[in-house]
Amino acid sequence: MILKAAWVVPVTSPPIHAGYVEIADGRVVAVGAVSALPSTATQVTDLGNVILTPGFVNPHSHLELSCYANLLKPARFWNWIEQLIRLRSKPGQLERERDAVIDGARQSLRAGVTCVGDISRRNCAWPVLKQLPIRKVCFVELLTLADHPPRNPDELRRGAREVVEDELLTVGISPHTPYTVPFDQIRSAIALADEIRRPWTMHLAETPEEVAYLRGEKGALSPTIEKLLAQCGIKAPHCSPIALLAECSQGVRPGSIAHANYVTDDEFGQLADVGHVVIYCPRSHHFFGHSPHPFMRMRAAGVTVALGTDSLASNDSLSLLDELHYVRTQVANPPPPDELLQMVTLDAARALNLDEQIGSLEPGKQADLSAFSCAPNINDPIRALIDSPAPANAVWIAGRPVI
Image 1 (spheres, helix red, strand yellow):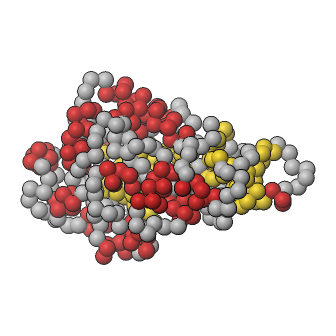
Image 2 (cartoon, rainbow, N blue to C red):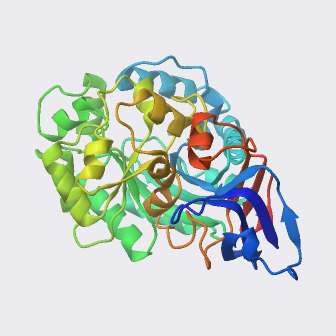
Image 3 (cartoon, helix red, strand yellow):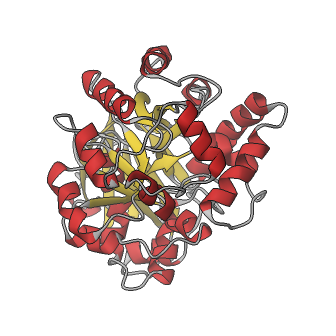
């Protein structure tokens, strides 16, 4: 199968005007200019005035929270989380959130997102996502303070074993945060991910209060949370988030760090040296009223930074193009368009340990592609995509049409 398009954007090389992508057995075989195609080429589909890109990768999502869209107003994180907990505790949670996973996956596909890194609190999302034609890393979440499993390393291991992988589904491991999971259990969770050779992720340095708690400041968190911590035997490690991360992940493969909103400049080099990927969620970051994210300084220090959406409980959409548009128009001195696009393709794939399989249009990679309509006279397809975000009008995953 050969797909012709007004523009092909490989990501790892410059956009190709009047380009094509050849696909066989679910993988990219060739990428180039239509003028180089032999006249004998068969199974050619001309998509017309579209921009053909690698499918976008959302490395940080909570699809099960999609049912809470527009129910919570922008607020500080700690106020928001209390309201969210109350919403989730209402009767019918499992059925409501399973339906939300379906809705969130469909919204993602319509936005040209072909792969999600999804975190599920009770490990209930993966059976739903398994039935849907979207690539996914389903993170099993460890939360010691929770009422339901996984709450300890043994339950986490059992939860990971329950996940039935296939060509589009990979299991991942996620110790929630260092204020909801004790140090030794975070280390056990990351060691499990390394043992089974699967990706891991953790929320870290999301709020100033978390950072203060980790450093040992009394009363940094709410009395309710501190009481729960005491009941579960969780104690402040009296160090910075990055120092804790270094201790917990020493000697294992790097993972991804969701948010990292309050990491100091002198710690960026440690992240870069180890190879952890930071996932910045721009519109969710704004929703919570955080200080400006240091992602540009992180990138300058050599840290790979990917973009994600977080959940619809703190965002307007699951569109990564909307995230790019927000960064380009609302953040001071943003990266150029081609670098922004890489943050939702190849860099985001790296956050999920999938960068050798997806994230760019190169021979041998999985044929996950998205096509977006464009005007016939554009000369910068990436800028056109970001400046005017729109739904995808065609999506392929492993070479199979999905939209």
